[in-house]
Amino acid sequence: MDQSVHDLTANQPRDEPWYRPAGNEVSLFEHCHNRGLAVMLKGPTGCGKTRFVEHMAWRLGRPLITIPCHDDLAASDLIGRYLIRHDGTVWQDGPLTRAVREGAICYLDEVVEARQDTVVVLHALTDYRRTLPIDKTGESVRAAPGFQLVVSYNPGYQRMLKDLKPSTRQRFVAMDLDFPAAEHEALIVQHESGVETALAKGLVSLAGRIRQLRDRGLAEVPSTRLLIAAGTLTLCGIPVREACYAAIVSPLSDEPSMVSTLRDLVDGTFV
Image (cartoon, rainbow, N blue to C red; front, side, top):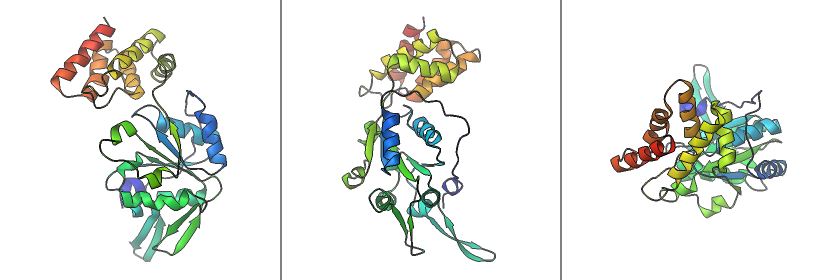
């Protein structure tokens, strides 16, 4: 079993994970949770999907188990397996099974990265049955009150590589998240990094210019997370343009002409 998945535990943050709503996503998520509906969060990398789930778990008072998905994630990594110990063979629940038993919110980050046969095990949890069949033990675990399945993925990136089957997609209420409006994003950058308002607005302005290069040679556009990282570096005494080169330009591209274009945008934004 993937040890990183095996070690996941449910947790309930004591302090509120700061999140600034962009629309009615908080209310919609609450209604889905109250009705036991599974939720799919769609949006670009770094637009706040994970922070939103953390905030909602805190708001709803539910423990949260987050599972990062990848190509090697097997169904047994989610459900559990038998382990051989010195005193015999014992069954150990996986993180999904623990969430079902404990009534936690289970968040599968970038779900399409998981193998298709792994995704199929989610189906019985996303309809009227709300059960998790465990073939190896013959048990069918009914979801405890409060359990909710949440998945996320980046449709802009995934449509070129992988995607969810229609039979899976139609089991979720989909919520489309995107980068916030400029004024809204500047407030987030300022709050999370601690920079002054003018610099936060400058970083967001730079991101807006770079995001116009989407589908013109730039595979991924700068996330709000990268802007926060750049702002944080400036507080350490690093000049703003150098901070942007390191935290925004270099993570986005290695292609010389694109790097040159991005650096020019930085220089034009912070003269």
